Amino acid sequence: MRLSGRVAIVTGAASGIGRASTQCFAREGAQVFAVDLPDRGLAGAHAGQERIATLEASVADADAAEAIIGGATKRFGKLDILMNNAGVASNALAEAMSLADWDRTFAVNLRAPFILCQRAIPHLKASGVGRIINVASVMAEGTGFGLSAYCASKAGVAGLTRTLALELGKFGITANYLLPGAIRTGMTSPLWEARPDIADIWANKSALRRLGEPDDLAKAALFLASDDGAFVTGHGLTVDGGLMLRV
Ligand SMILES: NC(=O)c1ccc[n+]([C@@H]2O[C@H](COP(=O)([O-])OP(=O)(O)OC[C@H]3O[C@@H](n4cnc5c(N)ncnc54)[C@H](O)[C@@H]3O)[C@@H](O)[C@H]2O)c1
Image (cartoon, rainbow, N blue to C red; front, side):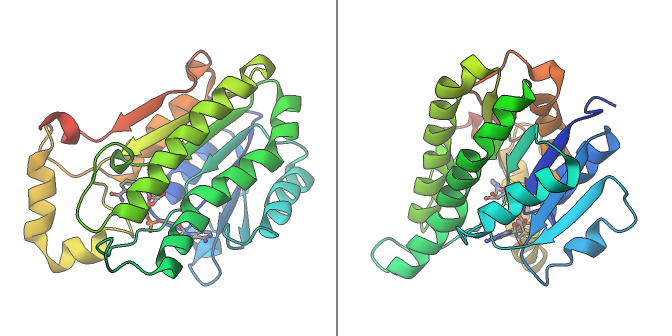
């Protein structure tokens, strides 16, 4: 029960890393306010869990920030942990990328975490043990064809989080980001199930010779959220099985 008495918000909580982190935080004693888009099966994903409350909203909608932060603090009385996990991938060569795709990627991956962190700050200051965990990607540091918007938005998450760590440390708030490698989630499974050869390439590129599972990330998030991570801030924690070791 490493998060006993803590209140957390997790976005993108219906699937993948967000779903696993929500369940993990709740198992460890936290009360969790889980957020995802409508029609993604959010309530069903956490049915019967008394420590988990759900809200269907888009983090890309600036007005939703009030509903998310206000909803969590009204429901559970305070806020200790904000995990900005919701994310979208876009795939188009820079030459062909529409501005609509660029803007949508940035709205979810970077603007939303900024707004939610901003609105959460007063509550995290009051907490005394405030935690920000933003989900970036190994693509914050690496790149790939078609990933200009995704990579740029995730590099932005890293810069945002380090700055928050600097500004908020004096209030006892830590701010860190995760850099997942190739993880089997709703974002990747459709392609990997259709093309197992591509899944094999990613698995074999990693030093540990396997794909990551959502729980691999949830456990890293738990470390950063708990007292165990109390002196870790401004850090990007790579959780990729050694995927990025090769040049
Ligand atoms: N899967 C990977 O290999 C991988 C690698 C690196 C980084 N990541 C990052 O991990 C995070 C979680 O993704 P995942 O892999 O678990 O994928 P996923 O698709 O399983 O989960 C993402 C969740 O975010 C939700 N979401 C998307 N847009 C939203 C919005 N506007 N408002 C609220 N919720 C929204 C989706 O509905 C979905 O439930 C993302 O930020 C992603 O970029 C994933």
